[in-house]
Image (cartoon, rainbow, N blue to C red; front, side, top):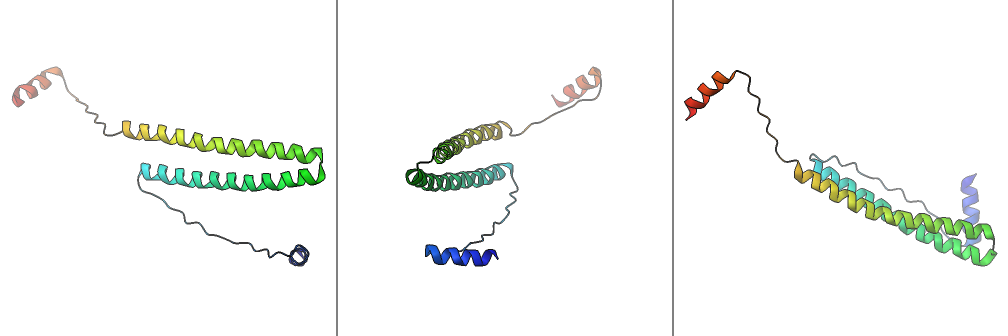
Length: 131
């Protein structure tokens, strides 16, 4: 039944509707820095897509507002504009978080923990032998 409705709407509106399905590949990097970079790129692409779709939606809702002059339509437009603005701000937050993670990555390099089990006399003998 939904297909009949879609066909009728396409004919009435004189458009062709099609749904594209895209597959996404899951990438599992070996190192932490690669993982961070992959997550950053994925998040950034998603946020850009959301902002672009939001801008298209804003244009559409503003057209509806002009045509209907309905207060509820203006309210929805205002909320949508606010949401798109917050999504754009999240892009900056992602940048800042990435910088923090890079700093953490640089500070964690090599850590050597040495533990000596014995008494001081044995340690002194060992040190004298190495001189």
